[in-house]
Image 1 (cartoon, rainbow, N blue to C red):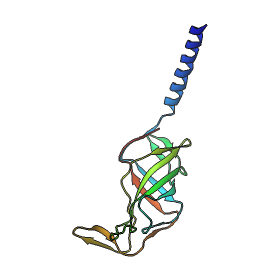
Image 2: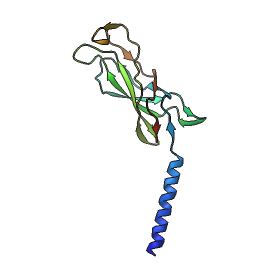
Image 3: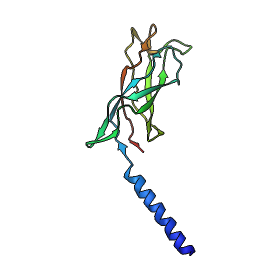
Image 4: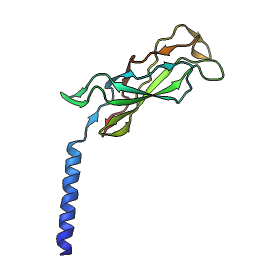
Length: 150
């Protein structure tokens, strides 16, 4: 009796594992993910602030759609003019995407929207003068630095 229950539970676990691995997908490093902002983002917003976005185009790998347009995404400010010592160019990273109802962390190259004026200093690096605003529904292109698997 106990042996039969053990075999039944083991079989169910194996079936569940096999089913979940069939749904597993990997988007390779180097893939570009295009998103659209859902709200405005200002160069005066603080570093670390997050904003909602949506994947703008289906992400297709080997002829298979792995992520549909409209998928929820999160963009985070990595640098901005809100720093107390001078201002830096607005730089954004795509930090997560929502897959099957759960957030999956992603690592991408940073996206730097155009700025009104840019000055290069020897030590300061790139800085922006004035406020720059990314309008809602603006497209941004991020390239994956690491593969994403779910």
